[in-house]
Amino acid sequence: MRRAAVLTAGSWGTVFAKVLADAGARVTLVARDTEIADSINDRHVNPRYLADIRLPDLVRATVHPEAALPDADLVVLAVPSHALRGRLAAWAPLVAPDAVYVSLMKGMEVGTNCRMSEVIAQVAGVGPERVAVVSGPNLAREIAVEDPAATVVASTSPATAHRVQAACWTPYLRPYTNVDVVGCELGGAVKNVIALAAGMLEGMGFGTNSQASLITRGLAETMRLGVALGADPMTFAGLAGLGDLVATCGSSLSRNRTFGERLGRGMTLAQVLAQQRQVAEGVRSCRPLLALAGSLGVAMPITRQVERVLYEGLPPLEAVKDLMSREPGPEYRPR
Image 1 (spheres, rainbow, N blue to C red):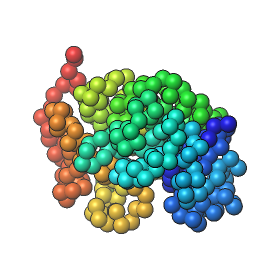
Image 2 (cartoon, rainbow, N blue to C red):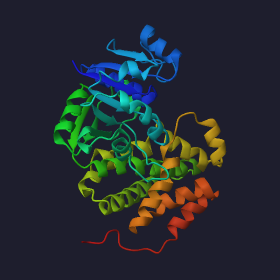
Image 3 (cartoon, rainbow, N blue to C red):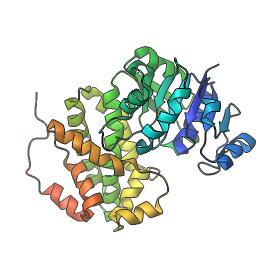
């Protein structure tokens, strides 16, 4: 029987622990709060996230990473992107030498502009063949209630991707494999920023044409950056690209879209941060994404306007006007 450790017990980490257990693994969920760990062990629910969802008996919880990591075949990481480096530095010495690291995170590291798989490789001192990335339209609540969905498991090693694929294949979640880690991670990171913009449009009362235009042009700038970094363009037409973008921009379950909607209704960044408990990764990722794009000469106008709204106090309506007044050009330039 596979053994997995999931760190930590937020909404997506908790739901993925359920997925792994439903696929037959014995899972230890590492919580930061004793109350959460005790509730999972005694009542099979996470009282802070998805309290109405019963977790399988194969899911146990602890607040002690040293009790979960040494025997784990899969080490699943579901922490905010800004916290990964510091936390993993403490966890990595406890991990078995042949374990696979699985990233559920969709963000970029501020300061280094690194993707999450790059941070894992650096901190844990492992090769890319021991790292896998899970991405796609993965709204935690919907997977928790077992709505049919698909996801992507990406690794530079096909064997590693297939290993993780087998570990999370359930009747309600169908995983596909991909070797394009760069494309899958960028799709997951940029879509959070575009979802902030989608929420702003919703908050300002704009309609379907506006949303469709934003999603399409958001996908275009995601693809431009990905191709400049060596990603396969076809990845962005798949689950980790278009699929994740549509889900995150269109659902009220998306914390990034919800965050953006509050900005569109006139709240400031500080006000939304004070009100919204869960992390909206796009708020932090927009700046490292722009820095990376700038170093490659890639234009990301939507991402730039989101940054201006967040950090320069630009009213969202002015951001829309700036985007609409850009010099028109061809939709794409043939190679």
